Image 1 (spheres, rainbow, N blue to C red):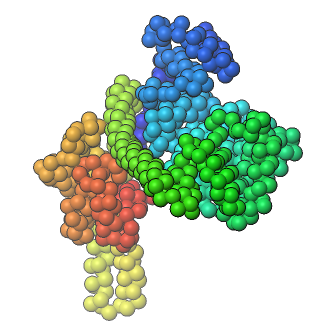
Image 2: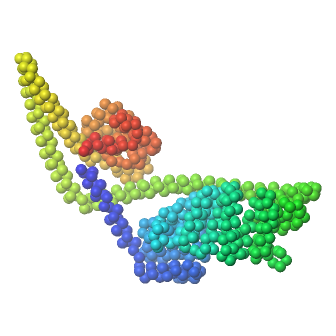
Image 3: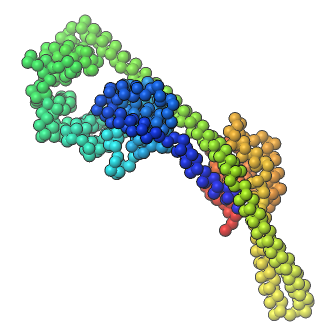
Length: 589
């Protein structure tokens, strides 16, 4: 009963703590309104918003935490709108942590989105993805006030990361959500363009039919709404597939549409600066139809484009046809250097990604451990404080009442047990006499009475043992040695596992307070020391993580020990349910 009371008291503590923290973190209404106004300015004119925020820099440190976090959130929002790259994640993490506890759904969404951008700008893809997932989980997309203006770029950023990491299936998943929300909120043109982004992941998967279907659908849809230039620009991506399939007439048709309708060419037929990679596309077509000189001309114009390695390879093939070995060797060397450059970059990126994944996994484990230790220490500190200040009188009253009631129950059970034993002895004496006189009927009746009394005695003895077990577990849980164990765990000592002497003391206290249970575990069931220690801690209501810390064992070892103990004690070949069965043996219904 005492343990149950402590749990009820502690269950109120989070609400009390939250109330106190909420008071400490409250906002100044005037400051909040001013920052909200600047946030609205940042949507359309981020540079002006940043200039307005600069006027507050000298005062921010004196503000309450809620206002400081609002300032930093608006500042990061404006910086993102102004295309300023983040170089650190420290402020973004602090803001995200704050709004995770005190923000609205949309505020949490924005905070986690900005944290993800900070990680992305720093090249930390795993952390960025985790922040974006946290952002997604922060909002209810069925709510009328869901901020799709932030949710849409969250999925857009995720698709870019997956694309950069060559994870087409994940990229498609992110793009599907991105497209759905664009469809709900944006123009038809933006929706069509968004669907066109599926071309890249499907091309990576080698699903050329799907790629062509997306390209042609994008072209037809944009043409339907009068966006001829964008339609032609989207169509040109299909040229390579048509060349690869030998459909050269289709490739020619696409090239003609692109050059005629895209609006990217001047009167002399030159494409605008920055789009010179198109010459490689056209050069590949010219080579496919046998116009070698035209192909060479286009390849040379595309030599500094994003297709440089392919251009060098194409020129090498052209000069091989012309039997110009010097040029073949020259462009072969350039091709090799370009491939080496790409390979080195891929290696660097791969090493960086592996390092990021390792560092992220390691930091996550450290953060989880630190958070768990801090949470345990904080809850114990607050629990002790409130228990001493507010619960001492009530605890004493409940304990005395409980003690009196249990004493009365034990005395009543003892009287009933004594009476039953006396009557049982009398019946045995009478039965012996009757056996000597050979009164068969009377003997049968007495034997029946003897059996009933024996069952009564066994029932009363079990009740007596039950009461003793309940008192024993209470005395054990309140003992000095158990208190020392709890203190080690709460104080987060570097070596929280007790010494061998500490465990011996724990076992002696257990044997003294719960002798019947101790004999069952050690003599009858012959549990190993680790199995015994695990069972004692579970009966004291320690959780699995605390059991690992106190025994100095890893979770897998504890799971195996629980399985063995459960099998020996209750015939259950599983770790699951051991704690429940142990507590049932102490507190049976």
